[in-house]
Amino acid sequence: MNNEEKILKIVVQTLDENKAEDIVTVDLNGISSIASHMVVASGTSQRHVASLAEKVVENLKKEGFRASVEGAEKADWVLIDAFDVIVHLFKPEVRAFYNLEKMWQSAAALRK
Image 1: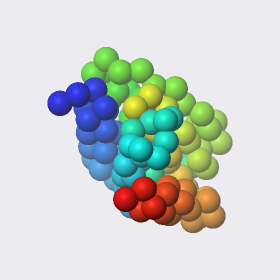
Image 2 (image 1 turned 120 degrees about the horizontal axis):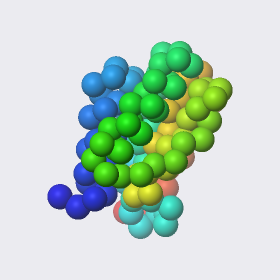
Image 3 (image 1 turned 90 degrees about the horizontal axis):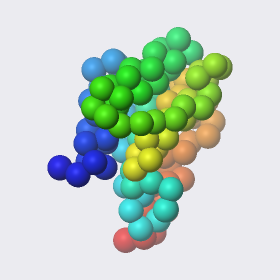
């Protein structure tokens, strides 16, 4: 398993174990140079979103991976940049407004 796959597995497993909602993974290979995968998930509240972000970063660090975080103060939308994997954590109403995964999934469908 390469680093990209390990990071993706850690992120998805951590989100699932910490009760993130509607976890979606988008393969960005061939459509973006920023990362290989994007993960989008929702938390039930600002506190839950912040906690999810904290756990993801903590578990990545335990396995020797670094990540940077933006938006944790407000926690409506938190971005975690784990280099090969970009993670977007949202409160449900913010996620519905931006609908990021639909945009990227459409781009991925066009690629095929």
